[in-house]
Length: 66
Image (cartoon, rainbow, N blue to C red; front, side, top):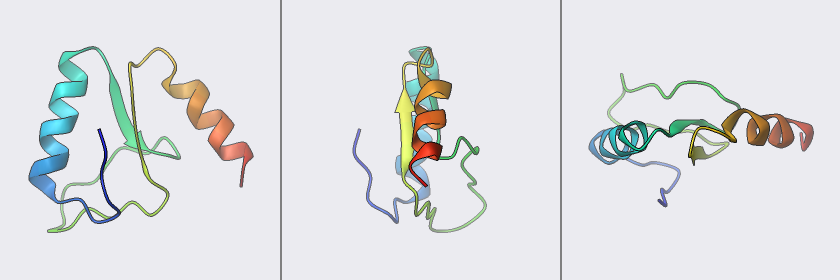
């Protein structure tokens, strides 16, 4: 899945539901839950969608880049 920096709410909700249904996980790149209370969802560090098994490890490695 590919999103731009200002992906809109319906796009992200569909992606989140698809990831969850497949056993995956979706957060921002720092591991924070995505917020849907805005017209535009803007996660400047990016959005991470994984199979769920490797999610936390990828977040850990990404944080080391900072």
